[in-house]
Amino acid sequence: MIIADTGFFVALANRADSDNQAAVKALGKLREGLVTTWPVVTETTHLLATRLGTHALLSFVASARAGAFEVFELNAGHWVRLEVLMKHYADLPMDLADASLVLLAEEQDDGRILSTDRRDFRTYRWKKRKPFKNLLDLDD
Image (cartoon, rainbow, N blue to C red; front, top):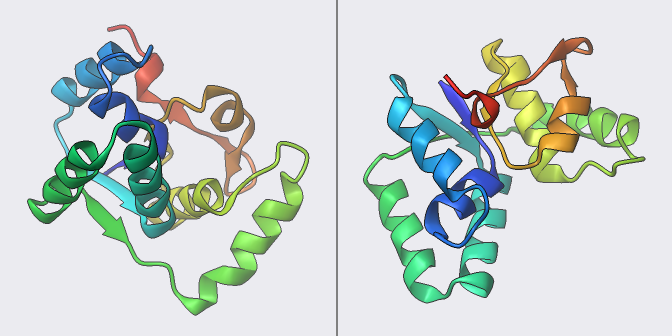
């Protein structure tokens, strides 16, 4: 499963976004499913509603209902790791959505991601040392 971040979803929905073409191209190349987390879903719905309006928000919700991506379930046992990550990357700072994606990479043992947040996901490491591979940055 490929991890999907908020910026990827927003770029897909917004043709004026500078990452729209890269997001559409990357989505078209995928041969496996997408996975994200509830904090990312929450952040995405907020940004879509405030930046693009109700239609974009409802289109995203409909895509979720149709199975366009899976949502990884955070549980009470994950809070310790999320807190450790946010403290470690406090200088960026790391928010809950990003921390949840690092935790997701650790849980699925795979750091392939679709994210417009290039600076942070070049910096973050999953399992303390493994870099993310941002599929939006691949030109092949």
